Length: 156
Image 1 (cartoon, helix red, strand yellow):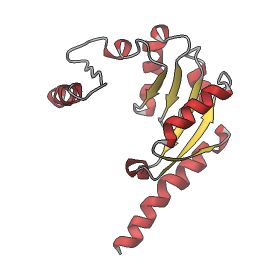
Image 2 (cartoon, rainbow, N blue to C red):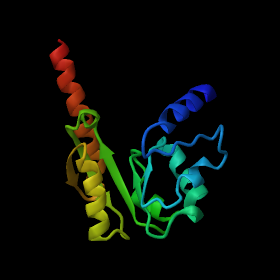
Image 3 (cartoon, one colour):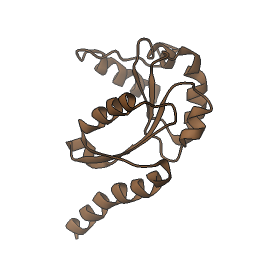
Image 4 (tube, helix red, strand yellow):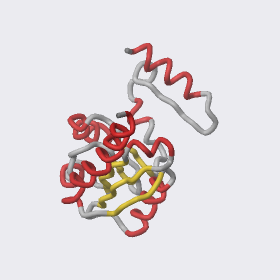
């Protein structure tokens, strides 16, 4: 597995405007990746989110926005670990072809300008629906399972 990560890191490094780090070559890669970051996209398994946030909390830029795509990790959990504005999002698989729908819930520290920036990020891959956090699980179920169900019917 380590060699796969290293290979991926090496191939990404050659892309213009991309800085690619791996733990294999840079032990503090998570913290190093935060330097000057305005948007921090958290895309790890849900159970790993709290530990990752604790690891990076003191390295975050004061104006950095934390944007999670991890299912089920609440805004309250993230806000209890980091002082920054946090967002809970859930894009669906059609985002790969820029036809996705992303659910977006803003934390209590997020301003309208912060929300607009996160919305603009996800609008690059489709539509964005702002919802109260209590509706994120339902939205994720519908938007995540809906395309899969249609593909299942098409295959039949």
